[in-house]
Image 1 (cartoon, rainbow, N blue to C red):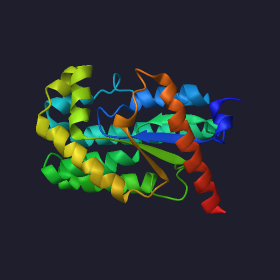
Image 2 (cartoon, rainbow, N blue to C red; image 1 turned 90 degrees about the vertical axis):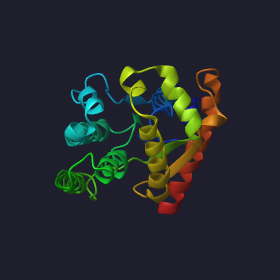
Image 3 (cartoon, rainbow, N blue to C red; image 1 turned 180 degrees about the vertical axis):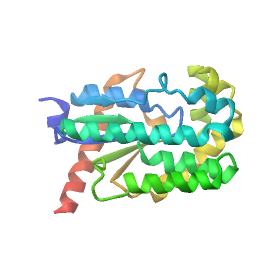
Length: 222
């Protein structure tokens, strides 16, 4: 019996991994996909035509970047459900508006008119009964110091050049966002409780918690 069957996880489940930059979303996505024999849906950073420009000039490119993300994530969400589920998804579509776009509007790096246009488009596309929401959002939580260490360790040039204040602000906004998120059930996991790079077998504990949460959600819907 595989782990998916052992813990009663439906073969058509869609599980989204959320968390701030450096929380380990990609590592968790691959580990869970391997454990459950699910497909992965990964954030394609390398082919994003706006990301480098954005890090060079937040004010000029924030709106362009958010529109690009919205289009790509919407297409990917449709693809996942057209396949019939069975996916682990790296980053949720909800973080774009709930955290990133709002942060740039609040800090003056996105024009208020652009922000209003973006949020109206997001609501029309995503916040409707017709949009296929995930069965579960796994939120990777952890102290800011641990997050910062991971960002520094992976050494992406554009991230190393980003001011520390940006990462602090982002971490704070994630904490606020997840406390009010209600688009689908949420399972919070502390990233200091495991190390999937050193001990891949720890993924079973996480799979068990996912199975318990999905089964509880299914019971509540009845």
